[in-house]
Amino acid sequence: MIKKSALPCGAKLIPLPRGEGVQTTGGPTQVTHCVLLDAIVFPEFSPTRHLKEQKLMVFDSPAVRYDIIVSRKTLAEMGMSLDFKANMTRWLDRSVPFHPKDWFTDKEAMQQVFKTPPTAVLKAEAMDAYADSLFHEIKAAKYEKADLDAHAKTLKHLTDLQQQQLLAVFKKHEPLFNGKVGKFPREVHFDVDPEAEPYHYLRPYPVNHANMEVLKNELCALR
Image (cartoon, rainbow, N blue to C red; front, side, top):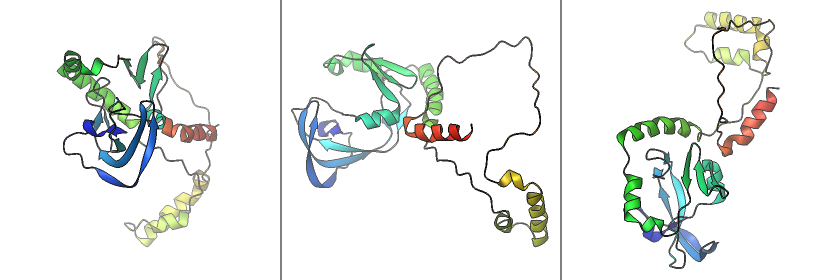
């Protein structure tokens, strides 16, 4: 949700079919419009990390002192968490301390937030390109037996004879296309440099919460 007074210039309000009352931590408010915003930035976390198009409900209530209210579902999808023990907000690899309610009216503090050295921007762009990949939706894998005859016929760039020859190769190795995860039938040996130093990445690999269930199911299927 976003307060009407905090909307960026040029934002177009979209009327809702019917208004509805919403109870927030800042008090009750009425919602009659929504807005579509793209490339949303949280500059304290990163000057280059953007959220793709989001549909936000618009409220206009003096009783609510917040400009933006983010739902728990959205926080989970973003991978953002609130650490009340450390008084920090964490978003993937970044952490920002909690601020007093009047902090955002401090002009000097705001200038420091938006003043970012060029080297920091380059570093942030590299990190955010990686973080952005975490927000892509992962589709559930479908392990199905391949129809080799039908697939060979879709290869229109081959002649009929070439299709039949390729189909013969497919059928020679038909177990590879049964839709099941198999095991390599031979032993595998890796030569390891005896002087190599073991590397252990201390932080766990981050996964978007929206993809967590799909990833768990995939790992279970590989057992």
